[in-house]
Length: 102
Image (cartoon, rainbow, N blue to C red; front, side, top):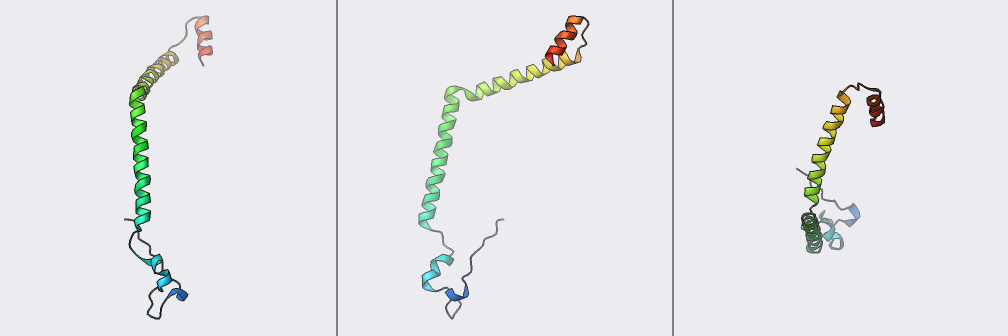
């Protein structure tokens, strides 16, 4: 749970009853600002629209499928590299090929 911090007025901003003076009362209220909330809502909506546009473009251009195909090919390539690494060269050409490989 996130702690809530409310700023306390300094002594010169207090009435004799320990309440903030009217000129600084707005700084210490516990209610949310409608203007700030509206701005936050606009930012969140813009972020959601941005993410939706990215998702549409990824689907339109097949980015997710291309990434999956790339991952599959990478796995196959790694298996091939492991197989080559595990095999022992028999001929001189095999030794040279293995040296070029690494």
